[in-house]
Length: 97
Image 1 (cartoon, rainbow, N blue to C red):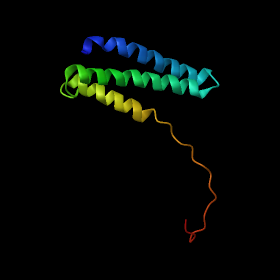
Image 2 (tube, rainbow, N blue to C red):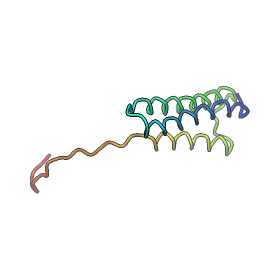
Image 3 (cartoon, rainbow, N blue to C red):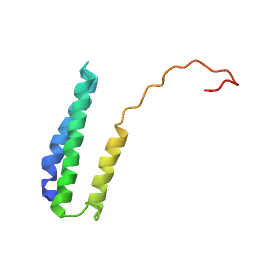
Image 4 (cartoon, one colour):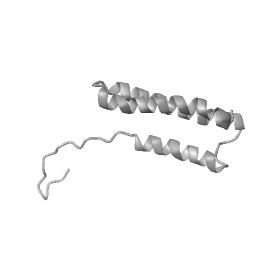
C-alpha cells in the first residue's frame, strides 16, 4: 500500500462523513448518522493500517504521514459526543457528597 491508493480510501470516507452530517439534520433516527460516521472513521483507519503494513514500518517519518495521524486523532477526539449535564439539587454549604 502506498499513497497512490489514498483516494480510494478518502473518497468513501468523506462521502460517509458528509452523509452523516446531512443525516444529523434531516433524519429523526440518530443512529443512522452515528453509523455513517463510524464507517467513515473505520475506512480512514483501515488506510492507516494498510499503509503501515505496506511500508513495513509505522507511518510517522514524513510530514504527510504525521499529518495523516494528526487528522485521524483530531477527527476522533472532536467527534466524541458531549454528555449533557444532569440537573442536580443544590447542596448546602457543609453537606458532603
